[in-house]
Image 1 (cartoon, rainbow over the protein chains, first blue to last red):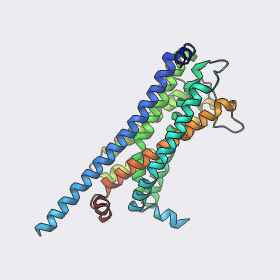
Image 2 (image 1 turned 135 degrees about the vertical axis):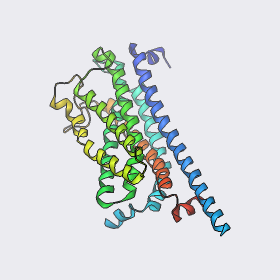
Image 3 (image 1 turned 90 degrees about the horizontal axis):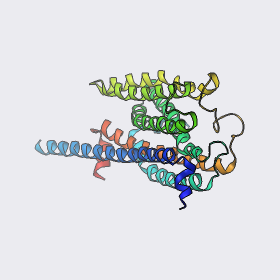
Image 4 (image 1 turned 30 degrees about the vertical axis):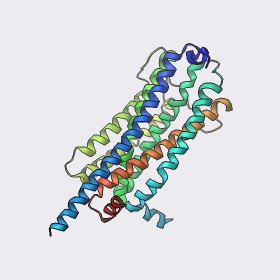
Length: 58
Length: 244
């Protein structure tokens, strides 16, 4: 890549943070959505095992 | 048509559809964003007035459009949930709120970074900027209201009402540059008539727009699956879904 590309015609200090922030937002969205789904699966799994344990006790 | 609509009211059906669509939407987003980034950063020519600073359009405009689209989806899902008492509607609204808030923040931050070299300031109390900031507060308000009640059903109803009332801000954000004097430029792509950009600049923008939309779809599917599992934890279908 040429230095002209990275300097963005003198606007690098605005252009790269702009793309960087958008990247962080995209990354956070994907990470937090996957984490929320994993946590929900764990909670549902716990509820299932509690229900199974209750039915065994009966 | 109505059969399809009724199916969308079924949490296990929506859970399955969301799980099937998420990887395809994410794959489409990666492809579209990949093309858009390469074409937007390296191939599109510099703007004759703004130079390379114009390239910020490739993340700012899709973020701003998504901030309005997600709010509209959230308000529509809330209205469906309140009118037809469809619980999936509340789940869609709850899943959309953090995504919309994050893209509204992205629109404000990227716009502010673009504003500094073009307007000489990071922030101005301009109609477009102010109404977009109000949109962020609405998202935060909807999320806070939902979690402020001990009874989740009451929280859902209160958040749905605020989302529906707040939708009045969506046309205000969009038309603010037409209705009032504004530092912000007018519509470039989303307007009546042809877009005021040459194809070499427009195609990467459309690709980024498509990429952001597909990304929202993918993240919504993942979040929606989580919401449905949380809300229907005791249901038989959840037990079967977890077992499999």
